Length: 211
Image (cartoon, rainbow, N blue to C red; front, side, top):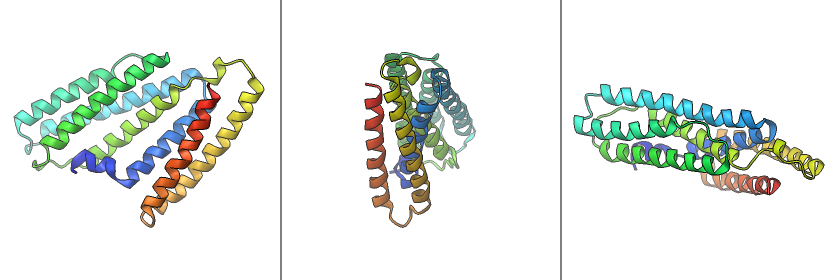
C-alpha cells in the first residue's frame, strides 16, 4: 500500500471514522432537518476547499511530471464538480449525490496512489486531511438519509423515549471511543472490533426508530 491507501488503512483513521459516524448520528437525533442538511453542505464545502489545496500542491511540485499532473487534475476537476452539486433533501437524491462524490473520490485516490508511488511528492498532512474530511462527509450523508424526527407524528412519546435512550448510548459510546483511541497502540485489533460491533448495534436501533 502507498499514499492515501496507507492513511485509510491506519487504525487511527478507522477509529476516527467511527467517531465521525457516532457524532453525525447524535446530531441527527438532536438537530432540525435544516441543521442536518447544513452539516452535509458544510462537509462538502470543507472537502472542496481541501481539494483546492491538493490541486495547488500538485501543480507546484517539481517532482510530479506534467503527464501525471494532468491526470490528477482531471480527477480533481471531476471531484470538485460533484462536491459543487446543490443541496439534496430527499433520501434518493442524498444517496445519488453521496455515490457520485464517493466514486469521484475513489477515482482520484486510485490515480494518486498509482501515479505518485515513485514520485518524490511530499503530501505532508494533505492525505491525512483528505481522508478525515471525506470520512466526516460520508458520516453526515449516512446519518442524514434516515429521516428526521420532526417529520414523524405517530407514536411521538415512544419515539422520543427511544431517542433519549439512543442519545445516552451514543454519548457513552463516544466517551468509550475517546478512551480507547488514547490506548490504541496497546490493543489495536481488539479495540477496533469491539467499537465497530458497538456502533453497529446502535445503528441498527437507530434505523428501527425511523422504520
